[in-house]
Length: 238
Image 1: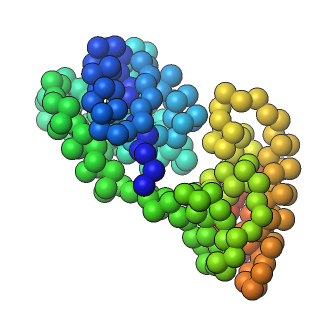
Image 2: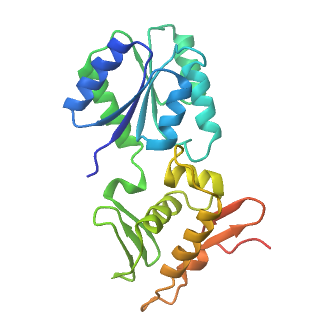
């Protein structure tokens, strides 16, 4: 099973370091941010499996960051645990209604926090928990870094593999070229939008290695006029 990535968003360095030490010892891979702006960059670049989010942050609050993530379809399903000194029931309800999945009040024990993280990850386990994504006879195995059509491995480049993994994990959603660049290449890498088109063509070609499967999986990568691309087995509307 892949190591889970946790983003710790906390402006107090001592608390952040305490949490990171506990999570490192529990086998998680951690990233850190001290404010909402830095946290959003980390989300785009590293795609965490779960976010530990302090309510009170400099600049934008934790609640405002949750609202932003929930508006972005690519990030809307990332589970969030709020960390806060606010103990009033109304505050807890506000946090949960905004989109937080759980609520931990300070001070808390590292053991309780880790237990809550594990419980939430089990409840929100994505399709990639087994390391495999499937669609009909098409299968992506993240552990062996291979793609199969009808159980036959096909030739596919490393960037095309990442692009296919992104599409299969977010099927039936339309994404702009900029969004695809951010989430496949990373937000801190400068690459021209037309690079996406080049790799889309290569991926379509790779998925047309049909073997015994009559389905043209390359056609599942649909061009969305005025937007970008989507990955879907449903025929595009005319």
